[in-house]
Amino acid sequence: MRKGILFVDDEQELLRGLRRTLFEMTSEWDMEFVDSGQKALEVLEKAPFDVIVSDMRMPGMDGADLLQEVAKRFPSSIRIILSGHSDEKMIMRSIGQTHQFLAKPLNGNELQETLVRAFALRDLLADTKLKTLISDLRSLPSLPTLYQELMLELQSPDVTMQKLGEIISRDIGMTAKMMQLVNSAFFGLPVHISDPIHAARLLGPESLRALVLSAQVFSKFDRVDSSGLSIEKFTDHSLAVASIAKHIAVSENQKKEIADDALIAGMLHDVGKLILAQNLPETYYKAIACAEDNNLTIWEAEQSTIGATHAEVGAYLLGLWGLPDRIVEAVAFHHRPISCVDKSFSPLTAVHVSDALEHEFGGNEYVAHSMINLEYLAKLGLTNQVSQWQEICKKSKQKRDSQ
Image (cartoon, rainbow, N blue to C red; front, side):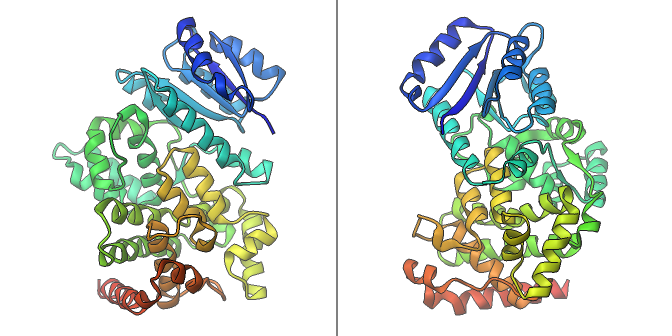
């Protein structure tokens, strides 16, 4: 099925450049080019587009205002902003309604790769309503106590980035949103960032303050309780898996970036549960009941009742937000690693193993839980490592229990 992309920029020369750059994709993509936000809305009223790519600075309706309106009226569209490095205040104003940021001057190959990746993501979920729901998300719920702690620290005259990073690293929603921003092309970093404290330092206190104060960037848990999902257990499990996954990667002598990605992927691996519980609480309650009544894993029950798993839902959102591929892959396949084409040790390996072991040794909220996929480990030549990883998990649990 052909994909539709709408490009919006008041500079005709840039639009002509985009036409030339993407000419080879005209056999697969339907592309339209307009020079104002108002014209973009008129075009969208006539036909939907899969992706909207808009410049930030335009006369009249700027990119932030345009994507705000697109998010309201056409929530299923993927929304991308083109921005210069001087637009930080405007970036903060648009972060709620923008999925990804690309830096100007525009790199044609980077744009094409971003669009290809976006279209691949849309094929990850079959359910159109779920796609729309996730595309419309501006934030993930944050724990009220941590949000208040972060606000107090930001107002302190002795604020330190170390402290801010430590607070954020204990909250799944805040971490995901910060990673979206710091790994965007707006920052132009040569490598991606997976360490929350490093990310906080790169953003700085002013940008973090603007991020926290942005409307709807951090939301509250107001519907999760009725879904049957325990936020305390969810958070404890996510943080435990993150820690164990990083330790496993380190024990396998992996590079620092692999270990850091394993940490973040471990922290975010179940973020799809948060999305489903917050936005479809009654449906998710049924999924949990289905798991308990039928001795199913939660992801099997989700597939049965919702038509998609939390792994797919979480990966879809993180991919939309432009998080690194290794992290998205680890989230997407952490229950079914054998389905991943990569057959070498990766953050997926660490997260799959740590999730299974943490459920086994740390206690599980459901009757059944996923086991380590030994066929997958055999293909990686790692089956002999399981006993060592079990010891890492046991020591981690003992350390948490003693605190």
